[in-house]
Amino acid sequence: MSNEAGAWMKRWAIIAAFVVLSAPAVCAEHYTITLSIEAPHDRAEAHSDIDPPSQGLNPRPVCHARRGDELTFQFILTSNFPHGTKKDVTIRYFIAPQTRAGKEASPRTSKEAVTEGTFVMDFKPDGRVGVRQRLHIDQAGAFLVRVQSEHSDSDHEHFAALDLVVE
View: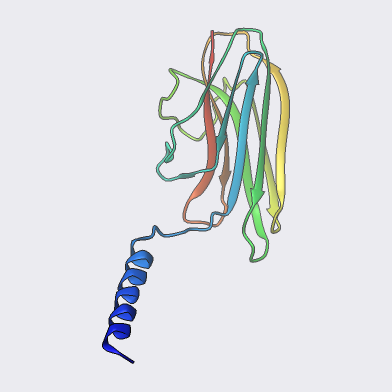
């Protein structure tokens, strides 16, 4: 091998090592979530985030509505864990009042929740669960719309959240 070919190979090896070492770590997430709320004149959609941190990594989208508007709340959560069944995973969803949009919120529901529900299920690979619900909110204020995993046998939980502002 000539010195010129050896020099090119060395340069390519350095470039390849730089690309591999500078690339962000790719983590396979256990669940993907699509969460949306639709009002007559606005719509917001949020996707999977992780907890911790409790607020997640992504800012929450905001949907604006008027009191009494018909709202459509929907989420679909899909398991991406390819290595068997995740057992006894809790999926909790709720729409609950908060003091203002964007406020850091606890992942627990409150007695004042407009709607809430829970599924406890075993997730096979590509297993899914979802809800589509129509509802009306007659009080003005800010609401947290959230779906989250609990007890998923992971070092972090998954959620999607958005804010609903009713005027």
